[in-house]
Length: 405
Image (tube, rainbow, N blue to C red):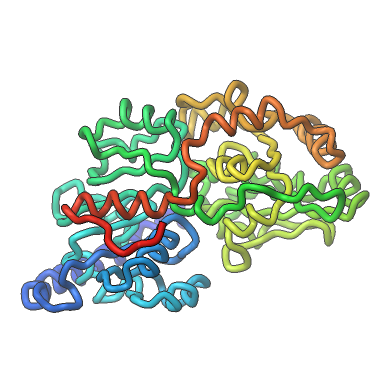
């Protein structure tokens, strides 16, 4: 209870400060709206603290193909991704006064998450609902949607462009989420342009990547509460499993554990009982680089498996809390893991071990999973960034000039 009260108090203080900065920036914007630095301004962000998703790949494409465009990336000073953004130029410090000015004066606001371009997702989502955020808003997407996600419904957010990447996803979002005609577009995820479409099948020295998603409510609990949860205990069980460790040791393989961004603060509390197991924080690794590096993926419900299947690599679903997940987190949508999934579905630790053993011994069949993946994805042409850029230009009544095919 004390922990929850402390978090609530911190939120109140933060909101007061941001409201004051927003009011001050609104007053200053009257005098700055015609200055060159804010004229026809586009801002791009992910969560304000990173640059490793579709926002970064979109920004890099625009900076490289249209360097004269007034587009700026918002990222914190201490972000591990800061340097690679600075190499492209045009950086705004996250939550700085200039960030507030850019939020008010930009004609296009682009992010991977709802109001991800803002200083605070919770507060400015309220502002968006009240119509206080002007300009065109573009939702590049964080991943491929497979379930009903009410926070993406029209009643909760109103982007001018909502990007989808697969036909079934596009039809589901278009017919379910309530956005006006023309808002939802089938364009492809920008980060997919950087994914290899072939991979080397190694006999030894392979990397197994364990990447589960978050659980609703757990991300806001205290450490002691989370350590008692089924989610924490089942993951820790894998990290210490003697049979799995023995299996990895036979061919000099390793296991990398990387939890979802919303569960990253619990990383220090997981323990590895072998040098073959590495527990990674977001400061130590980039998600896309991990996915490219890995030979086998173990996940649960995370949409990260779409990226892995896009590269044609084997994956395993470990859904130890399926009923609870569907009850408390997200309901099932158009995608059935059993009927549509790109790998076997396991409910117990014993099933997981057997499937992992098959995968590592090359007895893991790619069918029907390979065929399912090939049918699912609409684009494999490395033109996702271009399609997204052209779609944003069309919002502004512009056409693309001087870019390469």
